[in-house]
Image (tube, rainbow, N blue to C red; front, side, top):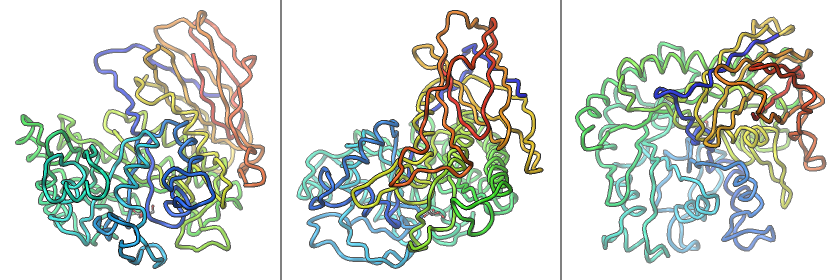
Length: 509
Ligand code: AHR
C-alpha cells in the first residue's frame, strides 16, 4: 500500500521545474558523436549536413532542451581551433581518454551548433581548464558570440557563419579533481575564478557560468569539502557583482552514476542486483540534499544552482565491443533508474536547474542505440518521453508513504514519484514501483481540488521481465502503453489504482 498526498495549491513560493532538468550529454567518446549523431555528409544514412535525421526526429519528440558537449573528460583535452575550418585541413589528434582512437575533428564548433539548431535545443559547452589556457577559452567565446569585426569573428565568417551564435550554458572545466587536471578544491577554486573573470559577456550574449563539482564516488566529507571551498571563494564575488548581473558563478555540477558492483553486466542480472541498483540510485538523493544544505548556508539568496550534468547507469561494456567505448544495453532496470532520478530532480527543482543524462547515443545510459542504418529507442528514452509533461511545469509538493519492497532486504520503499501542474492546468503525476513481484495499491489524495470534472488518463511503461529490453530485431519489446482507465477508482479528491510491479506510470488529470 502507498498513500500519496499532493498539494495542488499554487502560491508565491511554488517552484518551476526547469525543462533543462531533462537535458542530455554528448561526448567525443565511442560511438556517441561519430557513428552516432554524426555520420558525415557522404553517408547512405539519411542525414542533414552529416547529422542523422532519424536521431534528430526522435530527440525532438522528447523535447530535448539542451545538449552538453564536447565532454566529459574529453573536454579538458579539446582545443577548439582543431575543429574549425576546412575539414581536410583539420589536424588529426588522439582521444587519449577513450581508447586512443584518432580524432579527425570533423565534428567541431560549427557542426555542434548546427546539431543544436536542428534539435531546437540550447547548447551547453564545456571549456578546457585541464590542458587549455584562459586565453584559449576567452577566444572560443569571442569566436562564437562576437558580432563585430575582430580577427576571430572574421575567422568565423570565413568558416561560413556570418552572424554569431548565442550561448548561455558554459562549463568551466569538467571533473577537475580527476581527469580534468587532478586538482585540489582550493587550487581549482582559484583557477575557476581566474577563468570565469575572462569568460566575457560580449554584446547580445549572456553566459551562465558553471563550475565543476565533484562525483558521488568520494567519501561524503570530501564531497562536502569541495562545495564548501568553492562556494566560500565564489559567493562573495557573486555578491559583489550581483547589481550588475555580473556573477562569477551561476551553477555548480555534481556527477552521480548508478552501478551495481564492479563491472556489472547490463542485461544478465538477478533480483539482488536489481535491488542494489535501486538502492545505489536512491542514495543520490541523500547526497544531493547534503550538497544543497551547504549551498543554502553559503548562498541563502539562491544565486547558484546545482547542475547534475552527468548521471545514469554505468555497466560493463557489451561483449565484443571496445571496453573504452562504454557501449551498453538498456533494460527496464535502466528505465526505473531514470524515472527515480527525474522525480528526485523535480522534487529538488528549487536548487536543481539542469541535469544531463550520460550519454545520448550509444554510450552508457543512452536514449538511442544505432547499428549502421538501424536505430532503436531504449526504455530510458520512453521515460523521457513520458516525463516531458513536467518540463517547465510548476512542482506540486508530494508526500509519499509507501510500503517497503518485499524482496531484496534493502529497506527500500517501493513507490516513488513527483507531480506538477502545467500552464493548461493539467496535473501530471509520475510514479515508479521498484518492487519486482507485487502490484501495489496506491491511493492519491489531492488537496484543494475535486476530481469529478477531470478527465483522467495514464500511460504505463513495463516489461515482461526485469531485464526486458529492445533489440535491433525487436525494437518495440518495451514501449509505453495506455493504462486502462478501468483501473482507476475516483472518490471526491482521491484516486486509487493498483500499480503493477516494476513499472512506471504517468497520470494526467
Ligand atoms: O561519461 C563518461 C565520463 O564519466 C565522462 O567523460 C567523465 O566526466 C565521467 O567520469
